[in-house]
Length: 139
Image 1 (cartoon, rainbow, N blue to C red):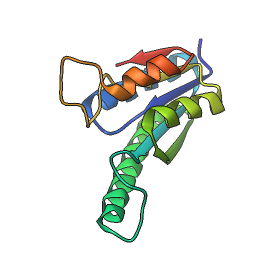
Image 2 (image 1 turned 90 degrees about the horizontal axis):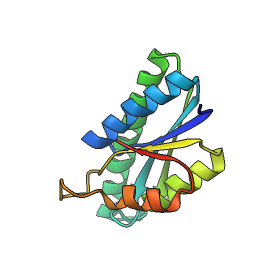
Image 3 (image 1 turned 90 degrees about the vertical axis):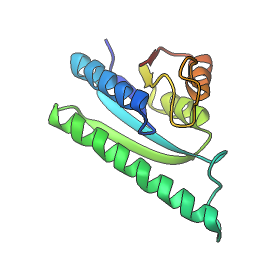
Image 4 (image 1 turned 45 degrees about the horizontal axis):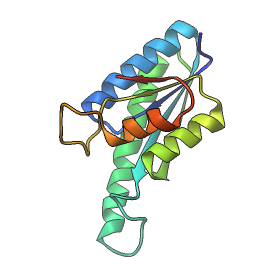
């Protein structure tokens, strides 16, 4: 059904559920899995010689840990996985990467770390759904 599945993670609970769903879809379809983590430049400034650099570096390290965890889970299931960490606006980077790899499915969490209203879909997820032009599974 799918050849390429893309999952976006920020380490939040919903993102962890999204990873689980992406792994299930990739395993069922014998698909290649891509995982992306985006350091949100709207929240964390691009590195410069300041305290913002420290915050950005911490977010990069956090993101790499999250991607490593996705890779470990995928490899334990025999799923081929490619990871990508980048800087930018998360929804833009997710949609552009999906276009680059011609993802058959994008999997995202219902909301991420920056969202405070548990009854409402997160803004990144909302924007991915609105702009993806391909199937999006919201977990």
